Length: 63
Image (cartoon, rainbow, N blue to C red; front, side, top):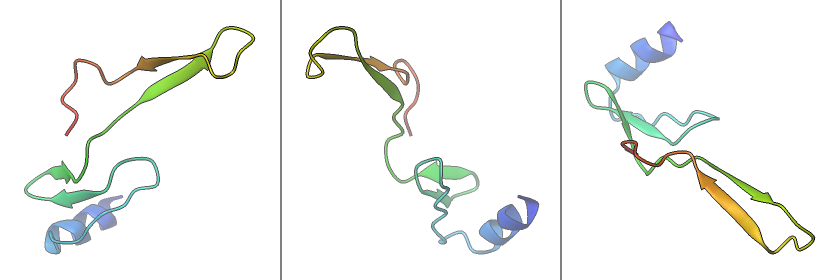
């Protein structure tokens, strides 16, 4: 992790693409290139088309 951060700071125009998050650029700190989203979609009945989505990012700064 330290090596990646060191290289990233040396080359701030490099796009970092983690396997678990939105791609980022380095501008003195990580800056996301897109909106972060997190949620759960569930169904509670017989019809799989009738789902309920729970937004886990509500109220947070998404960038």
